[in-house]
Image (cartoon, rainbow, N blue to C red; front, side, top):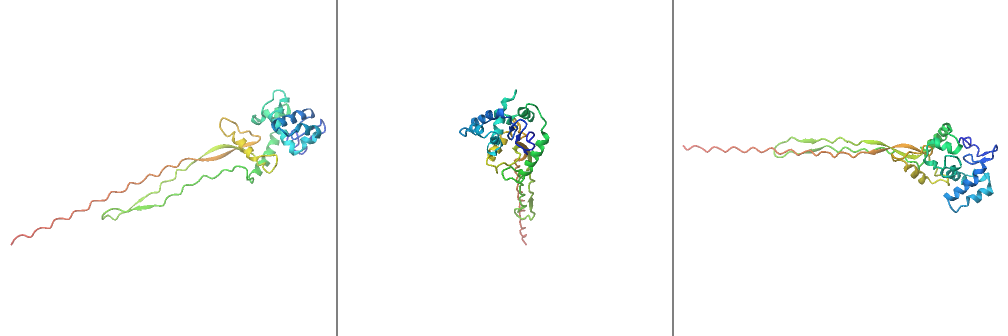
Length: 241
C-alpha cells in the first residue's frame, strides 16, 4: 500500500512502474518467469510480454505477481533473495523498496480493515467458549436396620480450567476471490503456530485458543456401615411355689 497509495493506483507514470507492488519495467519479465516456475503451464511470461503494464494491473495476474516477488523475484535487490513470507517486517520492506521503510501506518489501515471484516467472515477461525461441566444432582443413601438418619453425598466442585494457547490465524478472509484459497491461507498461518516458528505479522495474527484441562474425577463417598441390632433380653423363669 505504501507504493500504490493504499491501492488507489497500480501505475506510476514517472518511471512506468506498475503492479500491486511498484515494479519497474526492467523486472517485469523476471517476475513473470518466476510466476511460470511457481505455477507451471500458464505462460505468464508470454502474457506479460504481450500485455505490458496491463498484465501487472490485472487482478488475475497481479496478486500472483506479488507472491512471486515475495518468493523469489526479490533477488534482484542486493542482499535479498529470500522467502519474504518467513521474514520480519523490516526485511520485507528492504527487499521490496531497496531500503527499510516504516510502513506501519499503511499496514495499520489495511490490517484494521481486514480484521474488521474478518469478524463476519465464515472462513476465519473463532475462539470457542470453554465447555462447562454439569454438577450432578444430590443423591441420598438409605441407612441399614432401624436407623432412620440419611446422609447426602456432596457434588464435587468442577475443576475445569482453560489455558490460553496462542494460535496463528489469517488476518482476514480472502475466500470470496478466485485468486485465493482460504483453506491454504489458514494452513499457512497454522504452520507457524508452534513456539519454534514466528507468526508472520503481515498476513497472519496471533489469536488465543482455550485449551481445556482434564477434569478431576469425583471421589466416591463411602457408604456408612449399618449399626448392629440390639439383642432381646432373656425372659425370667417363674419361681416354683
